[in-house]
Image 1 (cartoon, helix red, strand yellow):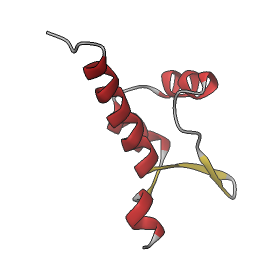
Image 2 (cartoon, rainbow, N blue to C red):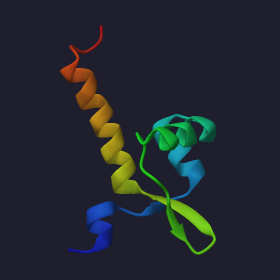
Image 3 (cartoon, rainbow, N blue to C red):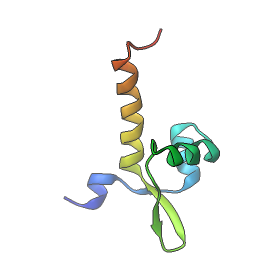
Image 4 (spheres, one colour):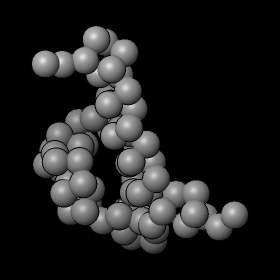
Length: 71
């Protein structure tokens, strides 16, 4: 199985912001807390694994369901 099939593509910070609906300051705060995927260094650039970010999103939805959901 290819890496792309497992993790999708590498996302730029702006793409991550658009995908999760958070600004970079909130994303980096979550990274410092250990509750958001770390970026991957690619030379001087940092990118996020699309699969890891989508997995984080999925876990947030699952956690909401485990806590009784919302209205």
